[in-house]
Length: 499
Image (tube, one colour):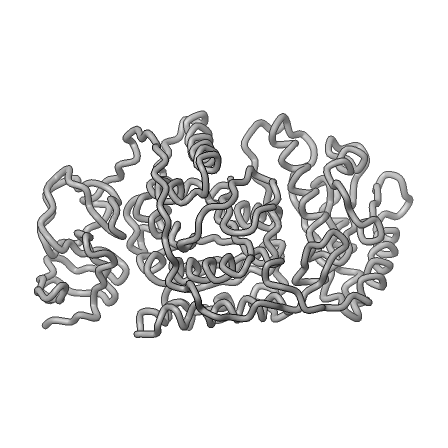
């Protein structure tokens, strides 16, 4: 039998293709006008060799090396972890070789406004929630209790009351304590919050007087503080303050704003063999649409740039951004090495089960989310985006930590692509985009948008416009599935010693 729908060759120079539907040993598939006989049973999402590949030879996917053959690989063979090894144990030197790429979405007309909340500092919010943010893990339960008791009093433009427990704020040293303070400050001043109660204990390292200078110019009518050790009943006092914040924010109004005020984070997790050909490139087209209309996108999870970093470096607008990107990559490699870890200890078991064999394989798919736009900003962990266009952010691949970092850097919404599925959320609306239709149907209460449609002859440009319009609907108040379930998560990056 032969079936051109069973495999997809992503780039003309590729030596492997992705199997769209499982094939059996002996099945024939067609590519480039030739028939290839499968030598093995190959699951959907995994790779088939399109030609004979010699041991030590680079295996090409996305037009780039995703590793080297451990042994001779015959055409038609299953290409995976048993016969493919990473190249990331090799040393690389980076040179700036700028390239310009024109997006397929250039010139496409889409909506250029949305209805959001304009804050005192000119930033736009897409939610009008009340947040209870503890400065230290010791008062997490108090924060949860205050939020629980005040939700029944929500009215007007206020959507809900959310608490954000975390285990830090004390017993941390050096950079970890600094990172905690910065992330908390970023969330306290986030435009998606119509009001914030900052709840402290009183004796912690990151107490309220220490934290306040990190807030910069904040709206004192919307950010209130409570030290639990200073009052007789901290829950009663907290409820009183939050009810006042609710009444204040209840009068807020959505107004028409340009999409240039919108910031969207880009993240993936639980990827599979389809992520790099459906969900991630679809998000890349979305990014091009938003940045093309003056908006901002932020790409993170630096370890999943390893192996594809030069593609991002060469899209930097200038040499200074290139050098910042080199530092971004090398700092994370040194972080791994300082803990005695190899830089290529990835992908995860779930990734491998889905057909991803090496970190390069994953990274070249992961970076598809960046689209074709030039890199306009490079951000440290906890640093807010101030340049419109595509930004790169220093954060690890961990879903909760990275998504929280995106929110802290100013993302109003996070787009999260996945081939395996996950129920997690972040401090901001987190849109789950499935790489395949089966996942979308199986986990309909997790998945918000199905990019698997691209495997059924749906045009990528049309689906990108549909995703863009969906995101603007979310920006105007449409709830994503995680919000419907009441999920709001946050996590802070820990790198050092805990006392």
